[in-house]
Length: 282
Image 1 (cartoon, rainbow, N blue to C red):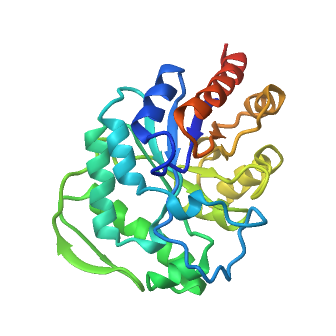
Image 2 (cartoon, helix red, strand yellow; image 1 turned 90 degrees about the vertical axis):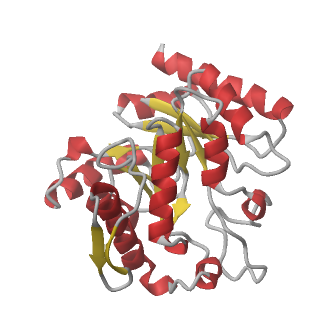
């Protein structure tokens, strides 16, 4: 099982480059940075985690720029959006950003994507919350066409462009791994249809161990080879036993949450997570 770390990187937290270097030095496989363009102050949509929306949701930096900075000071750690809100992004520009970051990092990018939860936020981008699933599907399909072809075109309900050319193409072919976030069953179905891996939020969206057999059955029924699809947890257990349960049940990746704090507060927590990782991986 792989281990990663995630943080809402802000202007008052440990920086993305410093976090990436520290995580790489400790042997973590990946670093994940979430995305919110803004948070409408109406706050009509309740926070899925319950209670007040944590401040870093308002303050998180752009993940592509933060990860590009992290790429420039690291060599092996994988760099992931966790998750990119493709329902709020132009697919042609996002396809270029993904390919550029994959090039800059030497093929280390993981494209974590999701359909979002903040209805007012997506509405500000012109996205109808009722059709965001279909919109996400088309945008991912269109980006795949762009990455895989010198000349690409796409004609759908929401995404429509005639034959065109754009570069660079990703280092990883046919494209960087697409990890789909979201709950069960919608997130799982989207991962099976369009992705390489499903990664629900631990303790909120699904218990990945309990849901694994059902997820594999859904994949087989959809014509996907179950072994070709990863199943990870975003928000790792904070103890050895919880992570050992994941590893013993063939879970792909466990991603530890880190607070949006300065280096002196984050490093002890990173060391604790690294100790858990070593006890599992040896």
